[in-house]
Length: 353
Image 1 (cartoon, rainbow, N blue to C red):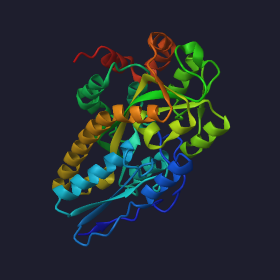
Image 2 (image 1 turned 45 degrees about the vertical axis):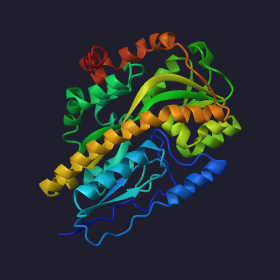
Image 3 (image 1 turned 90 degrees about the vertical axis):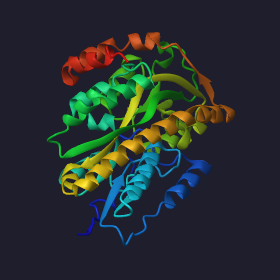
Image 4 (image 1 turned 60 degrees about the vertical axis):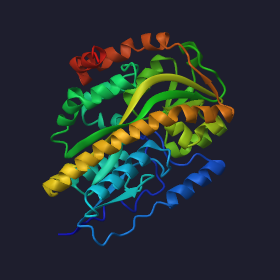
């Protein structure tokens, strides 16, 4: 039986961008126009041979360098190949299916099939996931990947039982970095009073406050103009997001702080997933895991090149010693020990690989 779905909210919020997203939208100037052109080029053509058509949404722009779009595009490619065209996947970038909260609620009810979404948002529904967002909890990418791909990551997925949403795989944006307009960051004291745009994530906001910043959540679509007008002094994001959305064009300094690992999740509506043929379920799960692995590798491989291109464009890149930054996080860890589970925090901190 053919299962074409026209999702609720698919035509809504075409231009709205989620405040909880790690990045996305257009940056401004010529880059803004280019990004809009790329987005418009994504066309979901009907496949008359498809027995099932699924839609996947994300809040960032349809830019080839954006990790969310890259993940979704690779997932589509693998699914359609594995199923020999019997499953079609349509892509909806730039919040066309709604903000992250709206997509989450849609997946719970089965009116939204899939989403690529920040773990930072999922943690508002699955508290244990919040441990992944604690600043400086991971030493490097290898450790982070071992944890989310292993028993700990599976336990987080298991904790989603009862939410109406399941996770097929963890992809990533990489580590988040600090990008400022007029001030080079060498020590926490350099951050005093700076208005830094961040996600509307209380852990991040508490961490930035502990470092003396004025954390300033705002819609991603407003960030470039806010930087130009001096409304904010900087923003923090993974390199791929800073680069692909060209916000560095309105900034002067990039501090490689690796302060938060930014995993994303390939999410599926549980009611929709459980209604599919078991063979399709297997194909979708395998495709998600393959797409996530491919995206991670591509993102890591391109990061040095992206940093070099931003440097060539005039951005000054620094590598501050983060020892003092990490020491300032002690009250944040203490505050969230009960909410996230001290055992979960300890499992990450003490993880050996």
